[in-house]
Length: 324
Image: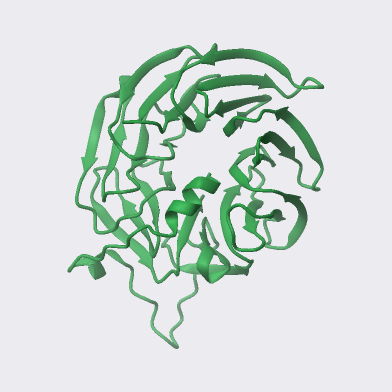
């Protein structure tokens, strides 16, 4: 999810509104009409509005949860929602991890220092916490119980699938641990180089997407033993990888230019979408249709499987994360 470093950058991220951008947003339902939004399927973190907002399938607001400076969020496998709140509205200050049940009720909370990453592991959460020279990856259960997966000063990102947790470091190392063991057992480790900024489960069991955010940026698909199946240079200022679940396809968004790309099998460039109406793109969710929802500071941008702009949703103060 969104790292403490990228939160600092986001305070200055631009929002570019093109002349025809109103056509890209869904119009508000008529006042006094019979419109009722559907159940929330997409959740966004509006940091500056101190709110977590649930959007229905049409991207209309269906639910709003008030929470101080939400900066990261993840939908759990059981329908619950994990949210990281910057308690003092500062990325390097104390953070709270809050759990909401499928009905929107707050069910658990835990306190951390600066949070660099939030991911899900089934119904649990994975948190990468960094304070000065100390770092750790922590697993949090729905009742708020904490278990340290790894104490690693250079930890930058983590991801999980089944009983395996992959950790990426600022030194370019990726580690794979089995959390079914107590303490978690190291299964594999591989030095990739660069700065590993994001990880995600790959298209088949045991594989992993990994993004090197240093220099020109490199995207890799790793085999279960962490050896790269392939590596490509992307030339984007991307901070996160947005995979299409179960497919060897992944979206990346440039944080400094209105550009998004989709890569397919073998790292082949499938779509290169230029001149998008919004800048400051970062987090998002790839859709089973081949499209993607992207969070920009003021709006959710929607691209379909052909890379064509579809109606999104605007009116936010400053979006920093999106989950589905």
